[in-house]
Amino acid sequence: MEWVLPQAWQRLGLITADPSQASLFLVPHAADAHFHECLGYGNDQLCRPATQRYFAALVRHVIHAYPHWNRTGGADHVFIFSHDGGLALFDTAADEEWPWAEGPRPGLERSIREVIGRATFMQPLGSRRHGYYSSALDVPIMPYGSLPKGAQLPAEGDDSAAVPFPDILAYFSGGLHGRSRRNISVAVANDPDVQFFARYDPEYGAHLSRAYARFCMHLPGFADIVWSGRIAHIASAGCVPVIIIDDLDLPLERLLEWRSFALFVSEADASTPGRLAEIIRAVPEATWRGMRRRLLQVRRMLMYEPPATDSPFPLQTPPLPADPVVRDAAYWAYVDLVARRAMWTAVAQVAPSADAEGSLLSPVVQTRDLQAFRPPFRWW
Image (cartoon, rainbow, N blue to C red; front, side):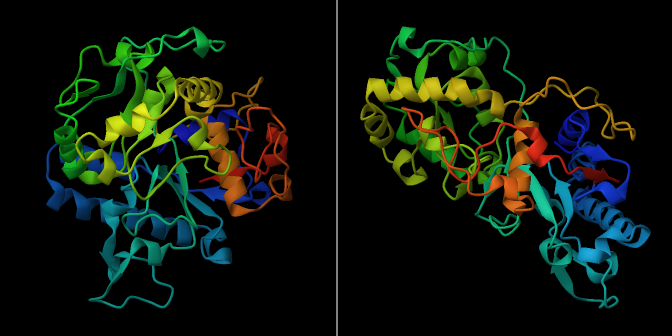
């Protein structure tokens, strides 16, 4: 994600080389890649401080080499992270590592949020379980996940009415990372209508995309953090998600009514034997078909175009805007960023549509015109 979004925004013509034309300043970095590259030959105790030093040097350079940060205290700067725990890679650092405005105060530590707290952070999903994410300041985005092997994308005009109503209630395949997954696996172990593979299912892609189950489970990821690319797999394959994560902000909540195409179950309910199946059985067939139809209508907003290159740094010369504009997850992440920061009046007080089935977009923002969101980024 550290370079998928910058590349996409560059293709859309949202990157400018002229800082006087920029409304926001995107700070490129590779902190997550730096951390995981280090893990290839080190461990957490070595790699976390190394990542802190890397990020501190980057922030120090942005503050001292350019005039833009100090004009607003970083309020118009944006950082993108590859998973929801991105800030946890450098949550605290000794004062001498950070560019304090009033000079170093050795022996004290401050969180990254305090140091660059006025900036906006974009990260896959938003977990309110820890202090690294702020619902008020930050923008949750879709994780990047490729379509699993064997999955077949449903056709754009796929008719949910023609799909058989599945007997399998819920499906999951993945490792038992964290307490929540283990508790849920135990709770559904004796229910034949809930399939929980505590390993990789070789038919994973096919099961996601062929209406094998009524719902596909999205569970907390490694060590109970909420980050998981599974929601990207589920949405792109057209399987109606059942989201079993508490304290979660989802991408595009200002733009999409998630409850129109996803089911939400608390972790406590899902960890109670028989309760998950009971909740799913209570969803009428007509309601499920409507949720699947809505998911197929909006899933393009939740998928990314493949990046043009593996390079973390796209070309500095902005290309011409894409024609036609690709309205993928990167496009809508930018729209959501603009809406959250309330920088353009074009995104406020827009009436919802009078669609007989209910609008897929919330009343706060409903626009399909990128021109309303054109003020570009300066990409350092």
